[in-house]
Length: 161
Image 1: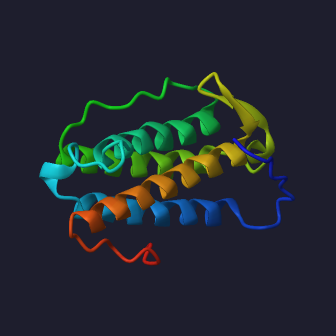
Image 2: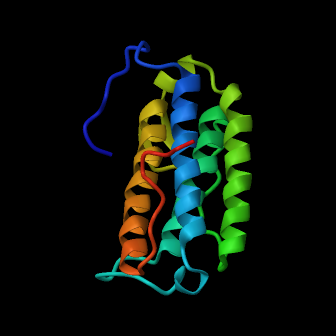
């Protein structure tokens, strides 16, 4: 997962972290919305995965990570079977709702606890959450490249509202 980042608990509140994450999720959803349906699971560049597959990975990690941090129960993160933009958007909205519902269940102390996510990733809870956010940003960037290659203007990256 990279160099460990130590928390002193004073940089931002848990609510500010959630707001930051959900801002990124709103923007990622707009990238998904902008993607041409017929290219979602077809178009790729340089052997990279399609944006549809990248979106499924983002979904497989987001709500399951929030659920696991909140409850200590880890369901295998499985890439979904969704093969349409409509299905991905519906699952995205369900995932967003679950994150919002699970977040208040995470105590402030829990963020600093060392946990093992999905039976294989051990780190402080906040680092695992930051990894999921970073992974989404990375894959959204790939989506931006794909959209531009397809002649589609992507949403402004700074508009996360």
